[in-house]
Length: 406
Image (cartoon, rainbow, N blue to C red; front, top):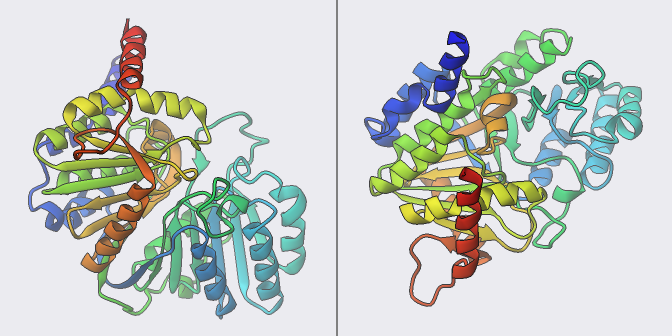
Protein backbone atom coordinates (compact mmCIF):
# COMPACT_ATOMS: atom_id res chain seq x y z
CA UNK A 1 0.00 0.00 0.00
CA UNK A 2 2.81 2.42 0.89
CA UNK A 3 4.57 1.73 -2.41
CA UNK A 4 1.38 2.29 -4.38
CA UNK A 5 0.73 5.62 -2.65
CA UNK A 6 4.31 6.71 -3.32
CA UNK A 7 4.03 6.06 -7.05
CA UNK A 8 0.59 7.68 -7.25
CA UNK A 9 1.96 10.84 -5.65
CA UNK A 10 5.06 10.73 -7.83
CA UNK A 11 3.00 10.42 -11.01
CA UNK A 12 0.58 13.16 -9.99
CA UNK A 13 3.01 15.71 -8.59
CA UNK A 14 6.48 14.38 -9.40
CA UNK A 15 9.90 15.84 -8.73
CA UNK A 16 9.11 18.51 -11.33
CA UNK A 17 6.86 20.36 -8.88
CA UNK A 18 9.76 22.64 -7.98
CA UNK A 19 9.75 23.93 -11.58
CA UNK A 20 6.33 25.54 -11.22
CA UNK A 21 7.79 29.03 -10.87
CA UNK A 22 10.15 28.62 -13.81
CA UNK A 23 13.63 27.38 -14.60
CA UNK A 24 16.53 29.55 -13.39
CA UNK A 25 18.18 31.08 -16.42
CA UNK A 26 15.26 30.30 -18.73
CA UNK A 27 16.43 28.67 -21.96
CA UNK A 28 20.04 29.11 -20.84
CA UNK A 29 19.31 26.73 -17.96
CA UNK A 30 17.93 23.91 -20.10
CA UNK A 31 21.28 22.30 -20.91
CA UNK A 32 22.25 22.00 -17.25
CA UNK A 33 18.79 20.77 -16.28
CA UNK A 34 18.71 18.12 -19.04
CA UNK A 35 22.09 16.82 -17.97
CA UNK A 36 20.98 16.43 -14.35
CA UNK A 37 17.52 14.97 -15.02
CA UNK A 38 17.96 12.83 -18.15
CA UNK A 39 21.80 12.51 -18.25
CA UNK A 40 21.64 13.89 -21.81
CA UNK A 41 24.12 16.55 -22.92
CA UNK A 42 23.31 19.44 -25.23
CA UNK A 43 25.89 19.37 -28.05
CA UNK A 44 26.93 22.27 -30.29
CA UNK A 45 27.84 22.19 -33.98
CA UNK A 46 24.73 20.80 -35.67
CA UNK A 47 22.83 21.60 -38.83
CA UNK A 48 19.07 21.33 -38.34
CA UNK A 49 16.32 21.71 -40.94
CA UNK A 50 12.56 21.32 -40.74
CA UNK A 51 11.10 18.54 -42.89
CA UNK A 52 7.36 19.04 -42.80
CA UNK A 53 4.83 16.45 -43.92
CA UNK A 54 5.90 14.34 -46.94
CA UNK A 55 9.07 16.40 -47.36
CA UNK A 56 10.67 14.21 -44.69
CA UNK A 57 10.80 11.35 -47.19
CA UNK A 58 12.59 13.49 -49.75
CA UNK A 59 15.31 13.99 -47.15
CA UNK A 60 15.37 10.38 -45.99
CA UNK A 61 15.53 8.99 -49.51
CA UNK A 62 18.27 11.43 -50.52
CA UNK A 63 20.35 10.41 -47.49
CA UNK A 64 19.82 6.69 -48.13
CA UNK A 65 20.81 7.04 -51.79
CA UNK A 66 24.07 8.64 -50.62
CA UNK A 67 24.71 6.11 -47.81
CA UNK A 68 28.18 4.58 -47.79
CA UNK A 69 28.03 2.30 -44.79
CA UNK A 70 24.73 1.89 -42.93
CA UNK A 71 21.03 2.72 -42.78
CA UNK A 72 19.21 2.32 -39.46
CA UNK A 73 15.43 2.64 -39.24
CA UNK A 74 13.51 2.49 -35.95
CA UNK A 75 9.79 3.29 -36.36
CA UNK A 76 6.36 2.61 -34.95
CA UNK A 77 4.58 2.61 -38.32
CA UNK A 78 5.77 1.08 -41.59
CA UNK A 79 2.92 0.01 -43.84
CA UNK A 80 2.56 -1.02 -47.49
CA UNK A 81 1.71 1.67 -50.01
CA UNK A 82 2.95 5.19 -50.66
CA UNK A 83 6.16 6.02 -48.82
CA UNK A 84 6.24 2.49 -47.39
CA UNK A 85 6.58 1.02 -50.86
CA UNK A 86 9.13 3.59 -52.05
CA UNK A 87 11.32 3.18 -49.00
CA UNK A 88 11.17 -0.61 -49.20
CA UNK A 89 12.38 -0.57 -52.80
CA UNK A 90 15.17 1.89 -52.00
CA UNK A 91 16.62 0.13 -48.96
CA UNK A 92 16.44 -3.23 -50.75
CA UNK A 93 18.51 -1.79 -53.59
CA UNK A 94 21.04 -0.24 -51.21
CA UNK A 95 21.33 -3.51 -49.27
CA UNK A 96 22.11 -5.38 -52.49
CA UNK A 97 24.79 -2.75 -53.18
CA UNK A 98 26.51 -3.56 -49.90
CA UNK A 99 25.08 -1.01 -47.46
CA UNK A 100 24.23 -2.54 -44.07
CA UNK A 101 20.51 -1.99 -43.50
CA UNK A 102 19.05 -2.60 -40.05
CA UNK A 103 15.27 -2.22 -39.66
CA UNK A 104 13.34 -2.24 -36.40
CA UNK A 105 9.56 -1.84 -36.37
CA UNK A 106 6.80 -2.10 -33.81
CA UNK A 107 4.38 -4.83 -34.90
CA UNK A 108 1.37 -3.07 -33.37
CA UNK A 109 1.76 0.02 -35.54
CA UNK A 110 3.07 -1.73 -38.66
CA UNK A 111 0.10 -3.72 -39.89
CA UNK A 112 0.83 -5.48 -43.16
CA UNK A 113 4.59 -5.08 -42.78
CA UNK A 114 5.29 -8.68 -41.78
CA UNK A 115 3.22 -10.18 -44.59
CA UNK A 116 4.06 -7.84 -47.49
CA UNK A 117 7.29 -5.95 -46.83
CA UNK A 118 9.46 -8.00 -44.48
CA UNK A 119 10.04 -10.91 -46.93
CA UNK A 120 11.33 -8.49 -49.57
CA UNK A 121 13.62 -6.76 -47.10
CA UNK A 122 15.16 -9.94 -45.72
CA UNK A 123 15.60 -11.44 -49.20
CA UNK A 124 17.57 -8.33 -50.21
CA UNK A 125 19.88 -8.72 -47.20
CA UNK A 126 18.32 -6.27 -44.75
CA UNK A 127 18.27 -7.33 -41.12
CA UNK A 128 14.76 -6.91 -39.70
CA UNK A 129 13.67 -7.11 -36.07
CA UNK A 130 10.38 -6.58 -34.24
CA UNK A 131 10.17 -4.61 -31.01
CA UNK A 132 8.52 -6.72 -28.29
CA UNK A 133 6.72 -9.22 -30.46
CA UNK A 134 2.94 -9.17 -30.02
CA UNK A 135 2.88 -12.96 -29.82
CA UNK A 136 4.51 -12.62 -26.42
CA UNK A 137 2.56 -9.50 -25.37
CA UNK A 138 -0.80 -9.56 -27.16
CA UNK A 139 -3.48 -6.89 -26.73
CA UNK A 140 -1.33 -4.40 -24.82
CA UNK A 141 -0.92 -0.70 -25.60
CA UNK A 142 1.91 -0.21 -23.13
CA UNK A 143 5.60 -0.77 -23.70
CA UNK A 144 5.35 -0.10 -27.43
CA UNK A 145 8.08 1.59 -29.47
CA UNK A 146 6.66 4.94 -30.54
CA UNK A 147 9.98 6.50 -31.64
CA UNK A 148 10.55 7.60 -35.22
CA UNK A 149 14.23 7.45 -36.13
CA UNK A 150 16.28 7.13 -39.29
CA UNK A 151 20.08 7.35 -39.00
CA UNK A 152 22.37 7.11 -42.04
CA UNK A 153 26.12 6.43 -41.68
CA UNK A 154 25.95 7.74 -38.10
CA UNK A 155 26.16 11.18 -39.70
CA UNK A 156 22.66 12.34 -40.58
CA UNK A 157 19.41 11.65 -38.73
CA UNK A 158 15.67 12.20 -39.02
CA UNK A 159 13.02 12.26 -36.32
CA UNK A 160 9.58 13.72 -35.69
CA UNK A 161 6.03 12.48 -35.84
CA UNK A 162 6.12 10.71 -39.21
CA UNK A 163 5.06 7.19 -39.99
CA UNK A 164 6.12 5.32 -43.11
CA UNK A 165 2.63 5.01 -44.54
CA UNK A 166 0.23 6.55 -47.10
CA UNK A 167 -1.02 9.20 -44.63
CA UNK A 168 2.39 10.89 -44.77
CA UNK A 169 3.25 10.10 -48.39
CA UNK A 170 2.17 13.09 -50.47
CA UNK A 171 2.26 16.86 -50.01
CA UNK A 172 -0.86 18.41 -48.46
CA UNK A 173 -3.06 19.90 -47.51
CA UNK A 174 -5.99 17.55 -48.00
CA UNK A 175 -8.23 15.66 -45.62
CA UNK A 176 -6.38 12.39 -46.29
CA UNK A 177 -2.86 13.78 -45.76
CA UNK A 178 -1.75 14.25 -42.16
CA UNK A 179 -0.09 17.46 -41.04
CA UNK A 180 3.19 16.61 -39.31
CA UNK A 181 6.50 18.14 -38.25
CA UNK A 182 9.87 16.44 -38.60
CA UNK A 183 13.52 17.44 -38.52
CA UNK A 184 16.68 16.54 -40.40
CA UNK A 185 19.86 16.88 -38.35
CA UNK A 186 23.52 16.53 -39.20
CA UNK A 187 26.40 16.78 -36.75
CA UNK A 188 27.62 15.44 -33.39
CA UNK A 189 24.14 15.08 -31.84
CA UNK A 190 23.37 12.28 -34.31
CA UNK A 191 25.45 10.00 -32.09
CA UNK A 192 22.73 10.29 -29.43
CA UNK A 193 20.17 9.21 -32.02
CA UNK A 194 22.41 6.32 -33.03
CA UNK A 195 22.76 5.20 -29.40
CA UNK A 196 18.98 5.30 -29.04
CA UNK A 197 18.68 2.99 -32.05
CA UNK A 198 21.42 0.73 -30.65
CA UNK A 199 19.59 0.34 -27.34
CA UNK A 200 16.48 -0.93 -29.09
CA UNK A 201 18.49 -3.04 -31.51
CA UNK A 202 20.27 -4.85 -28.70
CA UNK A 203 17.03 -5.32 -26.74
CA UNK A 204 15.51 -7.14 -29.73
CA UNK A 205 18.47 -9.51 -30.01
CA UNK A 206 20.64 -7.65 -32.50
CA UNK A 207 24.43 -7.61 -32.33
CA UNK A 208 26.35 -4.69 -30.91
CA UNK A 209 26.94 -2.03 -33.56
CA UNK A 210 30.51 -1.68 -34.87
CA UNK A 211 32.54 1.00 -33.09
CA UNK A 212 32.66 3.16 -36.21
CA UNK A 213 28.87 3.58 -36.02
CA UNK A 214 29.20 5.37 -32.66
CA UNK A 215 31.94 7.81 -33.55
CA UNK A 216 30.77 11.44 -33.25
CA UNK A 217 30.08 13.14 -36.57
CA UNK A 218 31.97 16.28 -37.49
CA UNK A 219 30.40 19.68 -36.73
CA UNK A 220 28.03 20.67 -39.52
CA UNK A 221 26.27 23.83 -38.32
CA UNK A 222 25.64 26.33 -35.55
CA UNK A 223 22.73 24.76 -33.64
CA UNK A 224 23.02 23.22 -30.19
CA UNK A 225 20.87 20.13 -29.75
CA UNK A 226 20.16 17.04 -27.68
CA UNK A 227 18.22 13.88 -28.50
CA UNK A 228 16.45 12.56 -25.41
CA UNK A 229 15.21 8.97 -25.35
CA UNK A 230 12.38 8.08 -23.01
CA UNK A 231 11.53 4.56 -21.84
CA UNK A 232 8.35 3.01 -20.52
CA UNK A 233 9.47 2.89 -16.87
CA UNK A 234 6.48 4.37 -15.04
CA UNK A 235 7.43 7.30 -12.83
CA UNK A 236 10.90 7.73 -14.31
CA UNK A 237 9.95 9.07 -17.72
CA UNK A 238 12.31 11.38 -19.58
CA UNK A 239 9.33 12.46 -21.69
CA UNK A 240 7.86 14.13 -18.63
CA UNK A 241 11.14 15.83 -17.83
CA UNK A 242 11.49 17.22 -21.35
CA UNK A 243 7.94 18.57 -21.22
CA UNK A 244 8.27 20.15 -17.79
CA UNK A 245 11.70 21.62 -18.45
CA UNK A 246 10.52 23.21 -21.69
CA UNK A 247 7.50 24.72 -19.94
CA UNK A 248 9.60 25.93 -17.03
CA UNK A 249 12.19 27.53 -19.34
CA UNK A 250 9.62 29.85 -20.92
CA UNK A 251 9.98 33.51 -19.98
CA UNK A 252 7.71 34.93 -22.69
CA UNK A 253 5.85 32.22 -24.59
CA UNK A 254 5.35 28.51 -25.12
CA UNK A 255 3.49 27.37 -28.23
CA UNK A 256 2.63 23.69 -28.54
CA UNK A 257 1.30 21.59 -31.42
CA UNK A 258 0.24 18.10 -30.40
CA UNK A 259 -1.83 15.28 -31.81
CA UNK A 260 -3.25 13.69 -28.65
CA UNK A 261 -3.81 16.21 -25.88
CA UNK A 262 -4.97 14.34 -22.77
CA UNK A 263 -2.18 15.41 -20.40
CA UNK A 264 -1.46 14.04 -16.93
CA UNK A 265 -2.51 16.40 -14.10
CA UNK A 266 1.07 17.59 -13.57
CA UNK A 267 1.42 18.70 -17.21
CA UNK A 268 -2.01 20.34 -17.38
CA UNK A 269 -1.28 22.10 -14.10
CA UNK A 270 2.06 23.33 -15.41
CA UNK A 271 0.43 24.74 -18.55
CA UNK A 272 -2.15 26.64 -16.51
CA UNK A 273 0.46 27.82 -14.00
CA UNK A 274 2.69 29.15 -16.76
CA UNK A 275 -0.23 31.12 -18.20
CA UNK A 276 -1.11 32.48 -14.76
CA UNK A 277 2.51 33.62 -14.46
CA UNK A 278 2.09 35.75 -17.57
CA UNK A 279 3.49 33.37 -20.20
CA UNK A 280 1.75 33.32 -23.60
CA UNK A 281 0.55 29.69 -23.77
CA UNK A 282 -1.00 28.45 -27.01
CA UNK A 283 -2.05 24.98 -28.16
CA UNK A 284 -2.59 23.78 -31.73
CA UNK A 285 -4.63 20.56 -31.63
CA UNK A 286 -6.54 18.33 -34.06
CA UNK A 287 -10.00 19.44 -35.09
CA UNK A 288 -12.64 17.60 -37.14
CA UNK A 289 -10.16 15.09 -38.59
CA UNK A 290 -8.90 13.68 -35.27
CA UNK A 291 -8.45 9.95 -35.90
CA UNK A 292 -9.64 8.95 -32.40
CA UNK A 293 -13.05 10.34 -31.43
CA UNK A 294 -12.48 9.50 -27.77
CA UNK A 295 -9.44 11.79 -27.72
CA UNK A 296 -11.53 14.65 -29.12
CA UNK A 297 -14.05 14.15 -26.31
CA UNK A 298 -11.37 14.08 -23.60
CA UNK A 299 -9.45 16.96 -25.17
CA UNK A 300 -12.52 19.19 -25.26
CA UNK A 301 -13.38 18.41 -21.66
CA UNK A 302 -10.27 20.41 -20.76
CA UNK A 303 -11.32 23.51 -22.69
CA UNK A 304 -13.25 25.24 -19.88
CA UNK A 305 -10.25 25.14 -17.55
CA UNK A 306 -7.90 26.29 -20.30
CA UNK A 307 -10.34 29.04 -21.27
CA UNK A 308 -10.56 30.33 -17.69
CA UNK A 309 -6.77 30.45 -17.51
CA UNK A 310 -6.52 32.37 -20.77
CA UNK A 311 -4.76 29.62 -22.75
CA UNK A 312 -5.37 29.99 -26.48
CA UNK A 313 -6.41 26.71 -28.11
CA UNK A 314 -6.71 26.28 -31.88
CA UNK A 315 -8.20 23.29 -33.70
CA UNK A 316 -6.60 22.52 -37.06
CA UNK A 317 -9.24 22.20 -39.78
CA UNK A 318 -7.84 20.81 -43.10
CA UNK A 319 -6.68 17.36 -41.92
CA UNK A 320 -5.34 15.38 -38.98
CA UNK A 321 -2.82 17.43 -36.98
CA UNK A 322 -0.18 14.86 -35.98
CA UNK A 323 2.77 17.10 -35.01
CA UNK A 324 4.47 16.92 -31.60
CA UNK A 325 6.34 20.22 -31.24
CA UNK A 326 7.02 22.98 -28.72
CA UNK A 327 8.39 26.50 -29.19
CA UNK A 328 9.83 28.27 -26.15
CA UNK A 329 10.55 31.99 -26.41
CA UNK A 330 12.68 32.76 -29.49
CA UNK A 331 15.27 29.97 -29.21
CA UNK A 332 14.14 26.58 -28.00
CA UNK A 333 12.29 24.08 -30.20
CA UNK A 334 11.24 20.53 -29.32
CA UNK A 335 10.27 18.07 -32.05
CA UNK A 336 9.80 14.33 -31.76
CA UNK A 337 7.34 11.52 -31.14
CA UNK A 338 5.95 12.51 -27.72
CA UNK A 339 2.25 13.17 -27.37
CA UNK A 340 0.89 15.06 -24.39
CA UNK A 341 -0.97 12.09 -22.98
CA UNK A 342 -0.32 9.51 -20.30
CA UNK A 343 0.78 6.86 -22.80
CA UNK A 344 3.67 8.95 -24.10
CA UNK A 345 4.52 10.37 -20.69
CA UNK A 346 4.85 7.00 -18.97
CA UNK A 347 4.09 3.89 -21.01
CA UNK A 348 5.75 4.19 -24.42
CA UNK A 349 9.27 4.34 -25.82
CA UNK A 350 9.62 7.91 -27.09
CA UNK A 351 12.22 10.38 -28.31
CA UNK A 352 12.57 14.11 -28.90
CA UNK A 353 15.16 16.46 -30.34
CA UNK A 354 15.67 19.64 -28.34
CA UNK A 355 17.16 22.43 -30.46
CA UNK A 356 18.57 25.74 -29.24
CA UNK A 357 18.78 27.87 -32.39
CA UNK A 358 17.11 31.18 -33.22
CA UNK A 359 16.86 30.60 -36.98
CA UNK A 360 15.24 27.18 -36.47
CA UNK A 361 12.81 28.71 -33.94
CA UNK A 362 11.96 31.52 -36.36
CA UNK A 363 11.00 28.97 -39.02
CA UNK A 364 8.86 27.21 -36.40
CA UNK A 365 7.02 30.48 -35.75
CA UNK A 366 6.46 31.09 -39.47
CA UNK A 367 4.99 27.62 -39.99
CA UNK A 368 2.88 28.00 -36.84
CA UNK A 369 1.34 31.18 -38.27
CA UNK A 370 0.39 29.38 -41.48
CA UNK A 371 -1.16 26.50 -39.55
CA UNK A 372 -3.14 28.86 -37.30
CA UNK A 373 -4.57 30.54 -40.41
CA UNK A 374 -6.11 27.14 -41.22
CA UNK A 375 -7.36 26.63 -37.68
CA UNK A 376 -10.25 27.69 -35.50
CA UNK A 377 -9.59 29.33 -32.14
CA UNK A 378 -11.76 27.70 -29.47
CA UNK A 379 -10.52 29.12 -26.14
CA UNK A 380 -8.65 32.08 -24.76
CA UNK A 381 -8.64 35.81 -25.49
CA UNK A 382 -9.57 36.70 -29.07
CA UNK A 383 -9.01 39.71 -31.22
CA UNK A 384 -12.08 41.67 -32.23
CA UNK A 385 -13.93 39.87 -34.99
CA UNK A 386 -12.37 36.46 -34.31
CA UNK A 387 -14.80 33.59 -33.77
CA UNK A 388 -14.20 31.01 -31.09
CA UNK A 389 -16.07 27.97 -29.88
CA UNK A 390 -19.76 28.93 -29.86
CA UNK A 391 -21.05 29.81 -26.39
CA UNK A 392 -23.61 27.01 -26.47
CA UNK A 393 -20.96 24.43 -27.41
CA UNK A 394 -18.55 25.60 -24.72
CA UNK A 395 -21.38 25.49 -22.19
CA UNK A 396 -22.17 21.90 -23.18
CA UNK A 397 -18.53 20.97 -22.67
CA UNK A 398 -18.62 22.55 -19.21
CA UNK A 399 -21.84 20.71 -18.39
CA UNK A 400 -20.33 17.38 -19.45
CA UNK A 401 -17.29 18.10 -17.32
CA UNK A 402 -19.41 18.89 -14.26
CA UNK A 403 -21.55 15.81 -14.80
CA UNK A 404 -18.51 13.55 -15.06
CA UNK A 405 -17.06 14.93 -11.84
CA UNK A 406 -20.14 14.11 -9.75
